[in-house]
Amino acid sequence: MKRRDFLKGISLAAVGGALSGPVASAAGLLTSQSAEAGAPAPASDSVEPIKGLSPVRSLDPEVSRPVTVIIIGCGNRGRTYAGYAKKYPAGMKVVGVSDILDHRKDYLGDQHNVPPEMRFGHFREVFASGKKLADAVVIATPDDRHYEPCMKALDLGYDVLLEKPVAPTPKECTAIREKTKKTGRIVAVCHVLRYSPYFMAMREVIQSGAIGKVVSIQHMEPIQYAHMAHSYVRGNWRREDETTPIILAKSCHDLDILRWMIDKPCKHIAADGSLSFFKKENAPEGAPKYCTDGCPHQKECPYDAVEIYTHLKQHLGVFDLHGKKDPELILSRLKDPRYNSYARCVFHCDNDQPDHYVAEMVFDGDVTASFTMDAFSPKGGRRTRVMGTMGFIEGDMKEFIVTDFLTRTPKIWNMNVAEIPEYAKSGHGGGDLRLVRDWLEAVDRHDANHLSSSIDVSIESHLMGFAAERSRRSGKKEKILK
Ligand SMILES: NC(=O)c1ccc[n+]([C@@H]2O[C@H](COP(=O)([O-])OP(=O)(O)OC[C@H]3O[C@@H](n4cnc5c(N)ncnc54)[C@H](O)[C@@H]3O)[C@@H](O)[C@H]2O)c1
Image 1 (cartoon, rainbow, N blue to C red):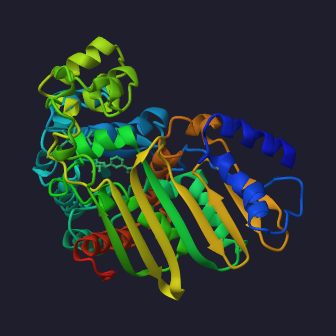
Image 2: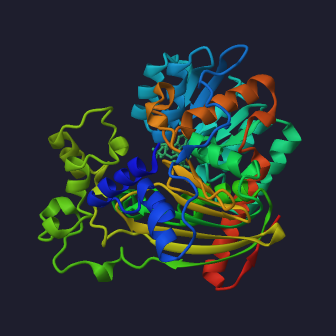
């Protein structure tokens, strides 16, 4: 790509207001930063693609037979992972389902022709016979219901795909790690970003030595404002005591990615943050408890539930609509007592998760990292800058640019993962289904080396999250426990 074409893209994006997008990052690299800081101009007029990275493999697993799986928790994540079996039946077969909600259990059970005797309610029913009924289980229950089914599954000899966060306490997390070692089973933690082509490529560049020794990383996790309202103000993850602190519930992926990029243990962490906005004292006068009760501020409130769900049609997965998007139906769900917690005014919820969070970390070798999570952003995703002794990487989860300080020629990784047919519908930048593929291969060969997110490293990054939360509360720098 010629530099002038690239810059043309930049100006178009700027007109559209996408100043924090990929092209804006490149603009910083190629124009304003160079000019304003008086840095030497890039040596070349072109932005070369990065060459020589590992190819993106098919999602079809290389397994000797379909791995049989029981899905425990048939909500959003359970359905996502079960969906893999529909696409790749030679790799995975859903032979059992478990959910305390009958309609969810039966919906997924019907999709996969699960016989009645393999449709369980509470996860305890799955293990009640004391017999192993499949090769593996997927644990996609709420955060505070991972520990018990995981320990039971390991005791009975199942391999496990375990949703993050692993468990709400360091003690339970390390107990799962020890049980995994003792039983020798495969446990993959759903740190899905590790499996996305974007982060895999960025790590490969770092590991190749192309930017020298990594000295520091800045990593930002913007949470789209309606996503914040949906999940962390109104929804399942709104309270620390019912799930986990937001640094684990939302950002354990990010701590994990930092640990993975730097590839060294974190020594200590200092964090801060609070819930500043979504609380009663900020409610506008006369705002009713539910947005559906004729709120006089509806038109000027970006958090209005009616707008977010019925018009913008965001986050509809919680309403059991199975693909239907009729506004009247969505509105009736918002008024239905089974779902109306999502119609609550964002200032009248029982939430306590911080809406902004900062953390600074020091890793072995004095590598530093800074992390920010903010709820007030038009877009989600991640933004990352990696500072090396010989070069620099800047990316926004769609593309990243590597600048070598010697050649000063920027190189770009901008594979459009959504355009790769197999990856198109795989969430988290392609990571969701790729994780399942690697897990199935690990189970089939009984070899945890197929996993990037094995239990040991996953627990380590969880312990970073617990330390961050201790620091946020104590105001002190905290060591990472073992
Ligand atoms: N890896 C990721 O990127 C990612 C993304 C979103 C959520 N998650 C995690 O995945 C997990 C599930 O999230 P979700 O969005 O699917 O939630 P969800 O509420 O949609 O699904 C959870 C399901 O578990 C069922 N359940 C509750 N208690 C149960 C029990 N005792 N036995 C059997 N089933 C039970 C619920 O009825 C529900 O259907 C959570 O831990 C969440 O934090 C991970």
